[in-house]
Amino acid sequence: MAPSRTLPSVRRDRIFTVIKDRQFARVTEISSEFGISEVTVRSDLDHLERRGQIRRVHGGAVLDERPVRRERSFEEQSEESAADKLRIGRAAAEMVQSGQTVLIDVGTTCRTVAQAIVDRTDLSDVNIVTNGLNIAAMFEPVTPQFTVVVTGGTIRPLQHSLVDPFGGPVLERLNADMMFLGCNGVHPTKGVTNVNLPEAEMKQRMIASARRTIGVADGSKIGQVCVAWVCHIDQLDVLITSSSAPEKERELLLDRGLEIVFV
Picture 1 (cartoon, rainbow, N blue to C red):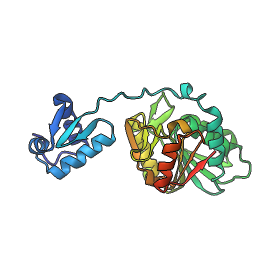
Picture 2: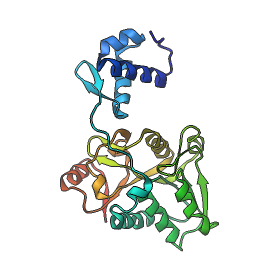
Picture 3: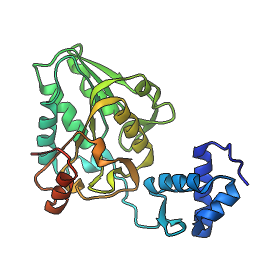
Picture 4: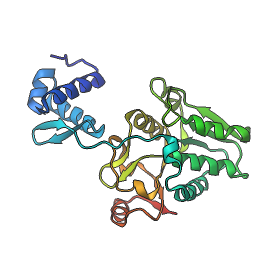
């Protein structure tokens, strides 16, 4: 039996192993085996469900065996919805003002945001913080107009991104004016999601370090749900997307009070 003083992250991994081995586990069983309250069990199951590892069912949880979207490389995605992404990038860049500190997430849409910011000759004294190696390199030719800070961390070659371990210390000491958040899914009830867990965790840290969070996602991402939960819809201040977004999901997002800029 795992002691109740076990770190939450370790305990959740062990609970997931139990569910994976048995296919189904009851809340009461987990509470008894791990020596924790049923309230704590439900909280842990909620966390595992947000990570896309299990599904909550009446009385317990089962392994989530729904098909998982394959994560494609940055290069594979770069040509998709290219025109929409360019328009999103320009609209996002217009929100930046001189003297601000701006967090830029990884991904192809965020790269168009970065390029549009680089192209603005009227900006000065802007601090750019990013966990994207390719995004950081884009600003090198325009320094000292921009000061560029890379978060540090461990390289994920698929997206040229930096993640844990050691991906978070810089963000914990930062109070940015805004963050541009990329993602693979924006759903009215499931929130913002991503196809991989390490980057989702970095996105959460970046959201916590910024006064405003601006989602940037082309229309094909609207209504999609991916494996790794990032944030709730009400944690977005603005969503910039293309007019190709499905009408039903657009209306549901607006009904939830989300400000949306269509390009």
